[in-house]
Amino acid sequence: MYLPPQFNPKDEAHAWRVMRAHPFASLISVDDEAFPFVTHLPLHLTHRNAQHVLLGHCAKANPHWRYLQARPQALVTFMGPQAYMSPKVYPDLVRVPTWSYVAVHARVEATLVDEPQAKDRLLKQLIGDHEPPYAAQWRGLEADYQQKMLSGIVAFELRITDVQCKLKLNQHRPESHAAMHAAYLHGNANEQALAAWMVALGMVIVDADARGSMGASGVTERPEHS
Image (tube, rainbow, N blue to C red):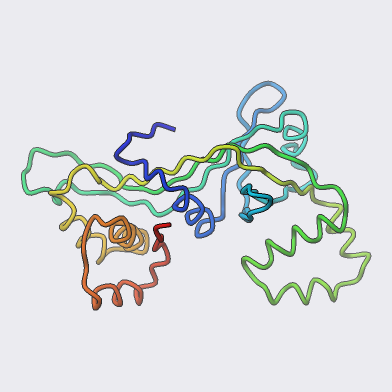
C-alpha cells in the first residue's frame, strides 16, 4: 500500500496488535482468470518457529481454497479504527478535510490443513479468541456431527512473509494534535480508539485521570511500544 514515512511506525508490534484487536480480515488472491478474489473472514494470529502465522478457514463450497492451493501467495488486510478528520483541528483555515485510520497489510504464503485433528485444533484456537466456553459444547457434540462440520470447511495456515502497518493520524502536523485528540476523545468508539492511538504514539500527553477516563470509555486499541 502507499505508505508515506510519517505514517509508517516501523515497529511491527503495532501490526500484531491491530491484527489481534481487529481479527476480521480480507483475504485477497487471484482466481483462475487472474482477477482479484476476496474472502472476508476472522483470522487467528499465532507465533510459531520464529514466524507469525494466521489461521483460518472457509467453506468448502468457496473456491478460494483452490486458488490458494494453486497460487499460495496472497494478501491479507486488516482495518482498525477509522474516522473523518475535520480541518477545524488546525489553528488556520487554509486546510482541507481528510480521513484518519489504522490499517495492516500482510503478504502471506498459504498451506492447506487437511488432517482432521489438525483442523480441529485450528478451530479451537479461533473459538478461544471469541467464545472459549463454546469449546466444551463443541467437544460434547456427536462425533458424526463434528465430522460433518469439519468436512464442510477447508482450513489453512497463512505464513506472514512481509507486513506493513499504516497509522495515518496526522503525525506530521503537530499543530493539530491537541484539538484533534480532544475531538476524537469525545466522539464515537472509532474516534475514541484513534485518540488512544495518539496517546500511545506520544502525539499528545494526558494525565493519569484522563487515561483512566479513556479506559472507561471502552477503548481497546492501546498499543504498547516494544
